[in-house]
Length: 134
Length: 134
Image 1 (cartoon, chains in turn purple, brown):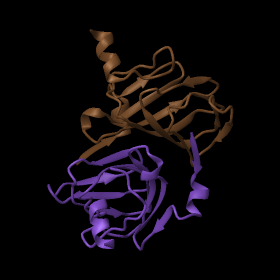
Image 2 (tube, rainbow over the protein chains, first blue to last red; image 1 turned 90 degrees about the vertical axis):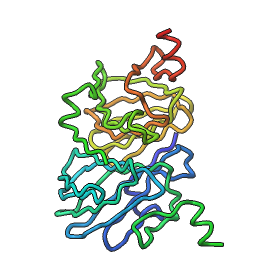
Image 3 (cartoon, rainbow over the protein chains, first blue to last red; image 1 turned 60 degrees about the horizontal axis):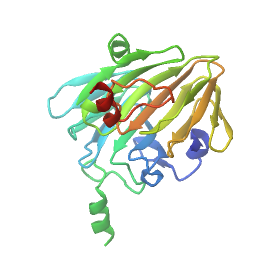
């Protein structure tokens, strides 16, 4: 059994912060669970275009409000506490938080913790990271 | 992209309720994500012995307080908002909620939605379910 808490994790390398969001990676690939689990905050007023080409992701809104635009269909959905959005088709999307939005995110395959979003808004695959560092 | 919200899911077959807990299965196996995602409430004052022999599970506490006892080691850990417990060794465990505890849970392999806890506190594997219904 592993026990972690977000206060300690936020003071460690598990927390990654960018201009538009931060993410506390509570579980990563090396924990061996087959998924990763993150508490991610998207910042009020930002326009966050993302495209996880190599991962499936589900995002459950814990607090905050905004919208998500599905760039494949053009549909816009409201985000508020209790809403889950699921990127089951590697969907290109834009999140527009009106307030800070705190979420519980699950990635499959699990994030290693070494990824950063590339210029397309994606996390690279492990193969791409290996190439980049080769 | 799939969009769901907990209010609608709670009014559907996605919500399973027992004497000790209820669980709203926001994502199940047939969603094809490779994990399932549940918002589960464990009830104040209950003693919940569980043993997921066939699944890995991570549980993130959103609200409420109590303890978890690791029956393998005898250790007791406090549960409060922001604590994650991770059953990475199919750990036998007991949760004792002092208040209702609301959690975000991830299972791998994903739960199908047809399981109930058996007499050992486990969810059966798909093979066991097939045998049981054969």
